[in-house]
Image 1 (cartoon, rainbow, N blue to C red):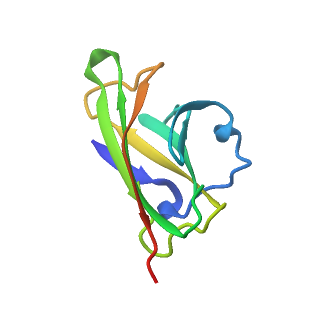
Image 2 (cartoon, helix red, strand yellow):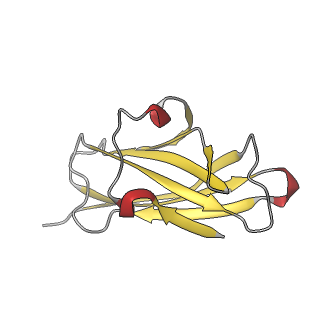
Length: 119
């Protein structure tokens, strides 16, 4: 399995057409429709801090599909954290060697860990 945050995890522009169709939401995390990309699937993810304090997030997403496709990816915001009311859009690219990316993948948010900044 190959996992790589796009653009070195710096996020992508929210106005990107890839942030049009939300598939699943859990707390501050929204996952959008996956697209096929270079032998894998790219999944747009957006985190919006709805709390009152700056927070750090760790997220794990899983994609499964027919033919045994099964891939899990993680991302985190460890450096600065996300200030209240701000968003962090990014993408995760996942593949499962030997398995074709499904046309209609099943996406689940396996976990969302939110840790508030303590000064």
